[in-house]
Image 1 (tube, one colour):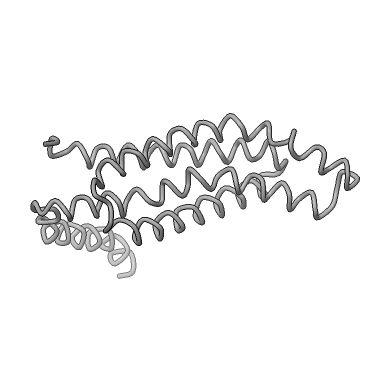
Image 2: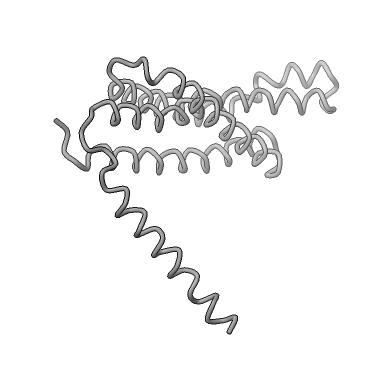
Length: 175
């Protein structure tokens, strides 16, 4: 049996690593795409599309998983391996794009679409695996039958109190 805080700690660290990957990919896409606006567009759209696709796929498949916590660990390994690979491969994407740029005269809409598509495709695998982790983890915890989520009423009250407390300075400033 795992220690009680092992999975929450693993999921927290996984989320932190995902955010770090997003920032690193943003910088690396800037090397390929040349402008920060294009890099932000590719990274955010690729990241969000991958999260959505992974979440949808895992939601459909998680009920059929025999060992969801093993699947969760496997997804995290995929995120780590492909995340690091993408980090190192993004700056070298220009080697793939160079023949396309030469054949089209070096500029134009086609080259921009090719840059976007290549960077987007490179981000798809790790982002999709990231999107699948939460449904797989929750499905695994729900399947164990132990008191997963038993403290949700306490958490709900704490969130409500935090929202109320955050509103107080605004209410005081308005009066």
